[in-house]
Length: 113
Length: 121
Image (cartoon, rainbow over all chains, first blue to last red; front, side, top):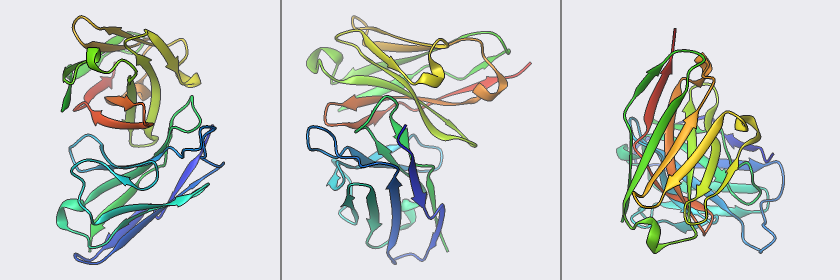
C-alpha cells in the first residue's frame, strides 16, 4: 500500500500569513497513463471533507485562488498564500494512482495563532 | 451539481450489522456511467480510511483488504442509492462514515454529510 506522510501534523498560522503542508509518498505517484493522481482535501469542523486540488495542482470549482498545489513524483505541497479564518480545519492529501487501496495522509490541523 | 445524502446516525451492539445508505441527486448515475461511489471512514486514531467502492453502472466493486469479508457495497441505479453494509461490528468500528463520488479524473468531487456509527454494548 502507498503510505502518505504529511508534515507538519499541526500548523498554527497568523491570519494573513502563508501556510504550507507537505505530503510525501512511499512510492512515485505517477500512474501508468502518465498522470499523477494526488489530491488535497479540506475538512472544516463539523463538515465533510471538501475537494480543493486534484492531479497535483488543479483547483476544483469554487476553490479560492489562495490555494495552490505543486510537486511531482513522491513530494507534494499545498500552499495557502494568505490564511483566512475560514481556512481552519484539517487538510488531507489523497492518492488514487495505485489502488486498491486508495490512501490518505494522516491529516494536518491548521489553526489560527 | 451533485448532492449525496446519507442515512442517519446508528447505534449498534457488537457482533451485529449495519447498513448505511447514500442517495445521489442532481447529476444522477444515468448521466455519467463511469464514476464510482466510495465509502470512507474517519476515526480519531486512524484518520481517513478508504473501505471500498462500487461503479454503479457496472455493479463492479472493489474493497480494501482490511474490509474484505465484512463490508458489502451495493447500488440501486433505479433509486440512485448506494449502500454499505458492515457486519460483525466491533467497538473500534465506531466512526463517522462518508460516501464520496469518485470522478474518472481520479479524485473525490462530492461527499455525503457523514453518518455516525456507534458500536457499544
